[in-house]
Image (tube, rainbow, N blue to C red; front, side, top):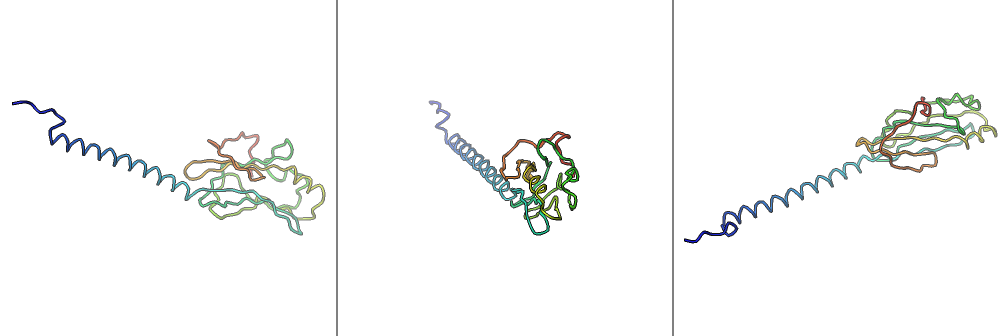
Amino acid sequence: MQKEKWYKNPEMLVALTALFIGLITAAISIYSAYIDRAYAKASVWPRVEIFRSYNNNGFSYGVSNRGTGPAIIEYAKVSSGNHFLKKWAELPEFKNISQSHFSNVILSSGQTINPVKYKGELISDVLTLDKKIQIEICYCSIYGDCWIVNRSNETQPTETCSVSSEQAFAQ
């Protein structure tokens, strides 16, 4: 009696076929999980925008989340020229202002906050100052993807949000 080769054995063919089907199923499951994760990230993608509004009584800066998910604001930087501000009151031109906190907050989708509202006549000093003010915000999604946006609404991805205490806006 001649011994059959192992790969000609019907049980081995069934086992190899089952192994092949198992590997294909595992690959499809991994790919499906990858697609599901990408979809989940896209469904809660924040998009923060910074804007300025003028009216007859003054102007204001606004921060809005136009994305589909919450934006976790990690830090804000506000500067005038080469000087980083800790609070709006450091600007002598901003006498009549109302303000709200916008560093380290969570903006839900569609939410807008006004970090500062200047009330009063728009004199040339205030308009000149407005052109010098730079605002930078670093925010993250709930999945830890982070972006930096500036006042011209140029958004750039970043690995992490970190800022020195000298540059961080405290209000």
